[in-house]
Amino acid sequence: MSTPQELASTFLAGKLREYCVQSNVPALAGVLVWDWGVTVVTGQEGIREVGGSGPNAIEPQDRFNIGSVSKVLAAQLIGTLFDHHSDLSTFVISGGGLG
Image (cartoon, rainbow, N blue to C red; front, side, top):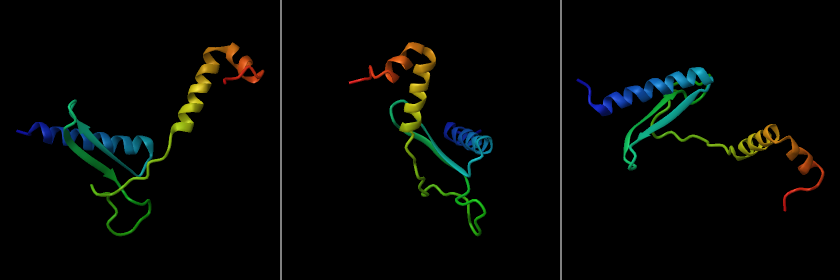
């Protein structure tokens, strides 16, 4: 019989593998944490370099470059505001601006 940690590890590995395929990304890493901050399991799935040679699977100690998403989120929020408040676009464009 599997322990809860083994089941969680299997679940995480399966989800990471699934998301790599769905998102067409070379690698993902994840962690499951209890509410009180205790790490349950960590996992990684994928390859270091597309088309790379030699040992290419990612390892637990590998680092990922994490990009900024703030510009994308800000653009999405502004677009949502314009979609839901048609009078807002007139206000901002006409110079009634913020500040």
